[in-house]
Image 1: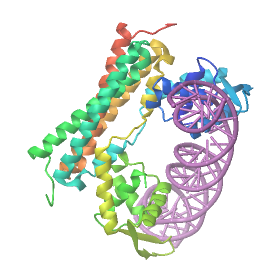
Image 2: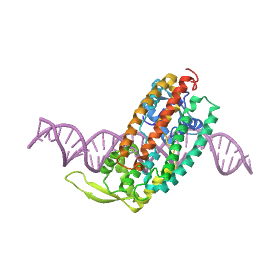
Image 3: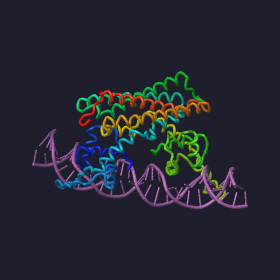
Image 4: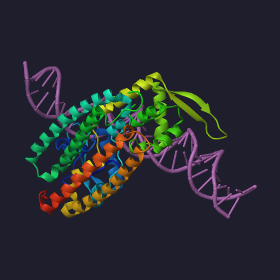
Length: 185
Length: 185
DNA sequence: CCGCAAATACTCGGTTTCGAGCGATCGGAG
DNA sequence: CTCCGATCGCTCGAAACCGAGTATTTGCGG
């Protein structure tokens, strides 16, 4: 059980039993699809895995019309415990991660000073609009639910701001020559 | 071709032809294994994929003793072009990413105010030591190579600092009641 | 009241990822 | 010279991942 989507599922079932499709829908409604990669295929895999571990259980299998059956899953006692353990662990221990931008920056040299500045400028622009969006949806959300339920957006905003700041500085450093290009300029 | 490790391989071959094992070794030497997830299995897969695309080519197959053969790969002209295109794209376009901490924070509520603070404190501590490490290796590296070749560390440091700052503030907000816990405290 | 887009609900199988394992060689302690 | 652990270099199958496809139903514009 490594897929964070499993955590999301447990978190939802904490409130009430659901069937997979409803889980996906709820996650999207709450904007949690910004924090979890929710794809249908993986969702069903993950649910099966949680069953195997005994963290969730099938509650009922409803058949409405001739549509595919919906199986409703609920949390087990073990599942409830594992959930908090899971959250706790991920909060405590920073995991090694590999954001694509980090990879790309490692080879920034390949773009040459002009190319690098040009590309970084575009990124900055995109970051600004995405920040705008996040701030907007955060404001909206705050009118509906307590702050605790949107802290993850605050985190995302903060990180995006930091990145934007860094990108800006690097652009400046390249242009001012504080970040010189070795060989072929 | 989506695996960033492919980009790392192209980047290395830019300098000189190599065999897969040597690629992994070099990436580790340069500390680029902080920016790319380099696992042996994936490496060979990725090399095969790059061959399929015609971005690299086998240069020679050396047999030393009775050890497994080493196949040395070099960049093609197309490969060289694709490499910069790849870097450029990843710099320009922020990709949706799903860091585990973002997931965990989404369910911070589950830990309760005391548990959350306790866990966040530990994270802060770990972040501080890992920052120390990064700053150290950055200093060391700067004495060996031009700054351009270590910018990715500067980025990583900056991001870690931002996260640390945020974590600190949230701890403060929970303790001061600015971030209250709805239901059951 | 007809037809068509959107929503409901899931399955299936191809690709990707990965790490354990494997067989060899090298370096150096004793 | 001989044993052992580290390094070399790769293969393989199991698991994870994901998106296109399927089949039904609901809603609603005309």
